[in-house]
Length: 40
Image (cartoon, rainbow, N blue to C red):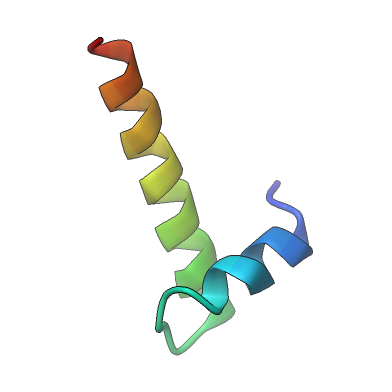
């Protein structure tokens, strides 16, 4: 579970209509970072 404060903070960076979309965007971004960090 992602803390609500992190979702709100990320929501100020990305423009999404719904908090659920902000949370999904944050999860996807975090996953991509982890994937590409593993490649190094």
